Image 1 (cartoon, rainbow, N blue to C red):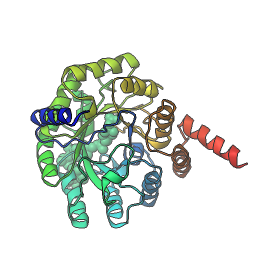
Image 2 (image 1 turned 60 degrees about the vertical axis):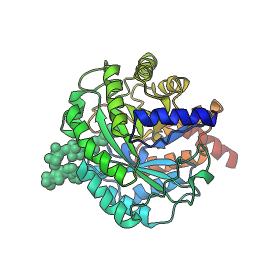
Image 3 (image 1 turned 180 degrees about the vertical axis):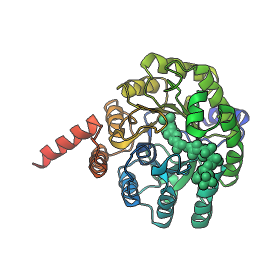
Image 4 (image 1 turned 90 degrees about the vertical axis):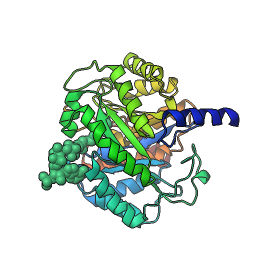
Length: 364
Ligand SMILES: CC(C)(COP(=O)([O-])OP(=O)([O-])OC[C@H]1O[C@@H](n2cnc3c(N)ncnc32)[C@H](O)[C@@H]1OP(=O)([O-])[O-])[C@@H](O)C(=O)NCCC(=O)NCCSC(=O)C[C@@](C)(O)CC(=O)[O-]
């Protein structure tokens, strides 16, 4: 892209979304993986997972080449008890030297001002509220552009495309959830934090059925971007998404004027369609995908929904297409095997299991 065109485009976006700061990938052969295993992956586990295991998981993931890790959430412990020790995880990350050779962006999910207060009280005390933001943030596949090796912290907010899911998940209506976000957004921007916004049940709702109106998703995405969100993660919480539905949703989002680079896609694999839907999204120009190592996951407020698409499966698939993720599939597969063993659940990543089998054969 010529610099003149880049300037014009930036000006146009700045006019449309005045508060936001872009952090999308730019190289078309680079795919950014947002590893959500430590938060979305673990939040639904019934047994209490020791904080040390969570920290070890995050540290191991940070050494696989991943650059963005969703590390925990500041939600009500009455609603999601598994995430109750996220503050300890944040404290640990802030007081230890970076675990990886490159800076990691850590994301923290929160639903309200109380969650933000809890996050800020730790982050501002320990990090002095200094993110040392690189502008633009982490370059596709590269380490150098991210500067001095300081990790970056950002927050995520979440709403949903149906009223029933929003009530079940956050005890408020969609409109009320947007109202809750306004002070969060203002304070986050003041503090220099990027804000990601999730839209759950975008391709099917456990309470209202599989036919979620894509125009509702687009309307919400536009509102969140206008409010200042830096990225929208469009979530197929139930895994009810199919290739045609995904294509229709992406076309609707484009028709609403939303740039592909403003979007991340977040697939769950309940019906085994997550990779297909990822490929449809890839063809549509999406270059940011959420996934969880070993296919961990399931939302406590989406009965029957299973895990996120496995990070190993996504990475294997993207590499097979000649795309770059910066992730070492073998190291990632080791982490998948390790965490599955630690928490006593099957490793749901087929690529992860196959990669480990090949690695063992090589050594034998
Ligand atoms: C939004 C609320 C808080 C409303 O819940 P509420 O019960 O209406 O809240 P409240 O304001 O009445 O407060 C009730 C109690 O919670 C406390 N409280 C209130 N807020 C906080 C907070 N932030 N952190 C810690 N404590 C908090 C508050 O202090 C009070 O404590 P008490 O006085 O009774 O001792 C609640 O519904 C909630 O926490 N919901 C989050 C549920 C959740 O974690 N869902 C999973 C994440 S979303 C997801 O997984 C989907 C996603 C993102 O992955 C994408 C996809 O696949 O769809």
